[in-house]
Every structure is written in structure tokens, then in C-alpha cells.
Image 1: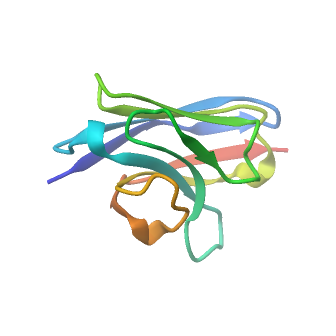
Image 2: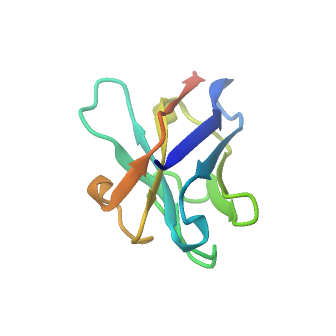
Length: 124
């Protein structure tokens, strides 16, 4: 079955940076839209952070992260990354790597594959 293996995350102070990585296996990665969602503490559902189309030519971001986060992919390594800069306490959440077919969707249900999640904590 498809697996999305996440790495990165951790603890950082306000204004710091972190890099999240996600490597896919058993997925037709060059044909898949990939995205990142996050679930903040106490929130009932994950919310959209960023997504990228199959060949990396189009990217989409939530307004709250525009200008601070960058999504990219390497189809030779079946990997998608999320570079997070100028992190703020409100970015604290569990971040999920996702795979789907519609790159410009912000709906979690449009992404059929989910990684296990990785914690990002930003201290004030």
C-alpha cells in the first residue's frame, strides 16, 4: 500500500525555521498532487497549508502561511518538502503530508493518502 514517510519538525522559537520532508512509496508520485495540512491543538480537523501540482509548476498556499512557507517536490526522489520560515506560535500543530489528484484543493477529503503526522511546536 502507499506509504508517506515524514521527517523533520520539532521545537523552534518564534521567527525560526524548520524543514519538513515526506517521501512516498508505492505511489505514482510523478502523477500525484501533494499537499500539507495541519491540525492545531484542540482543533477537530486538519486545515490546508500548501499544495503542489504533479510537476511542481504550480503551488498553492493558505493565506496564513503565504510568504513564509515554501512547498517543493523532487520527482526523482519521490519527495515533497515544506520549508517553514519565520515561524509563529500559531503555526504550532501536527503537520500531515498528503497525496491526491487535485492540486488546487484545500479540502482534506480530496487527498486520499496521509502521512502519520509530525509535531511542530513554536515557542513564544
